[in-house]
Image (cartoon, rainbow, N blue to C red; front, top):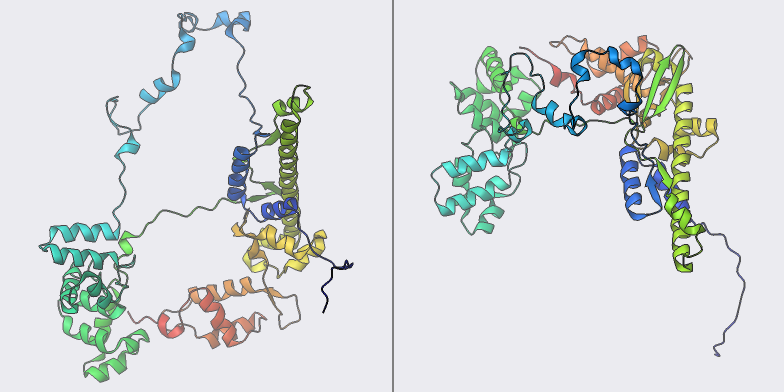
Length: 475
């Protein structure tokens, strides 16, 4: 068979995304903080871009002041020479008015207040501190450090004890002995391998640990279901004693490492603010800290110059095209976010005025059709972005939820509104006789909301609410 070269024509369609289009799509799905970071990277990478920072307004010199200044008090007129060079900021920091109840003196030799702050010790640091204070020899301390290094933030040992023993070259019995000694450290219950062991460690310190230890070691399932009569029959003790022991167990700490959690708050910076002015809603995009980009005038003059080389002009032209496209993409992003927010407000005006009970079911297609955009564009705009409304701060995705048709034929109810009704019913229930899922179904039916019991159970689990048997309280 002869091998030959032929030329053929083939017609095909192919989606090609230019780098500029890829950049525009990327900018669309960034939130405000990510966009600011991206712009700062572009400012470092592209010399043509610069931040259009407005220079601070300077006051006119005192020499140009009106002659009426002679009416000022005498002590303000007699300014000495060199007054303009005085460091007022340093003066105010050193001689600021102290708060009430604080000392009236200021010592410049003392360190600033920030230098006196200290970091809260972590659970690992707290355990290592106790390990070094205890009487451990070199091998025991080495195994103890390995055990402490495998304790998670909740205070539980998450690695297999056999693996720890093999890595340190000791027997399992040796590692088990070190673990028992670590379990005596503060906080009590640390180093346990499961919840049962954690509670047993703590029950040893109770005044009467016999009954509580039997309940924890043998009847955890019944204790979880609050089936106290079954525990009383199995242990052949009165129900009152079982209830008293269960009350003591409920006061124990299931997560010993909880006091060492990092309690630093996670703050949300909204990308959009919505204010109600009269009967209308006003949209304001959060541009705090957003650099105001512009093309550098120096490089514009460089392009117009006759002494600039051809290679330099090509480089500047390339960077200028990139900068112009970035500025145009940012403006397009801001316009798209504004239009999507405007459409959401039109659909959810009752929610913004009256609360979550009036949230309207909505999907991405509703907004896409309203503003004549594709659903994927709306999805990118609403991802990872938060909006500040008169009802609180919400993610933009929050407004898109399924609807449940009412039994009276009225408009559908949003699933988030149904969850709020379920949460409200559970918060008002009697703790000794909590509402079952079927009872919640019947109560919702009275509000013309017809959903199945399994739907109530699904919503309850999504909200992190326990079942009625686990919510029941006898003490």
